[in-house]
Amino acid sequence: MQDQQSQKSCIVCGMPLLKDEDYPEGADQNSTDWCKHCGSKDGLKSYSEAVTGMSGFMQHTQGMSEEEAQKAAKQVIDNCPAVKSGRMKKDE
Image (cartoon, rainbow, N blue to C red; front, side, top):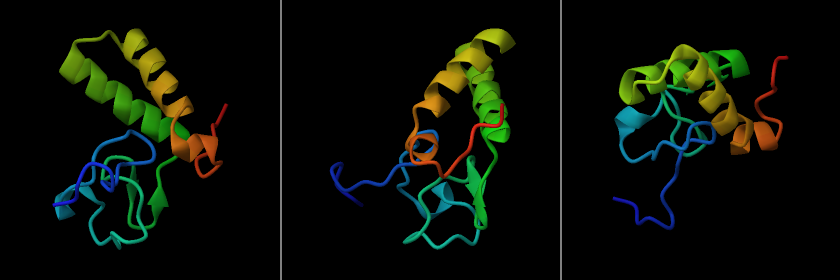
């Protein structure tokens, strides 16, 4: 198990990448910086797909309304390393 300082986390949602099951199926863990929820072995999901997925998760786990969850998901994703580095483009 990795120590906290060297622990990888998803560049979109921040999920810790601790186990094989956390990565997309078939992805090379050494070169993949995202979780199974934010991409596939071929690359990141689109911005809108990431926002939709995260907002659904927030509605389900935190009891947020759709509007609250969309706003919160956009705030998280807009500030994630994938967007800040330009690897995930906002589709507005």
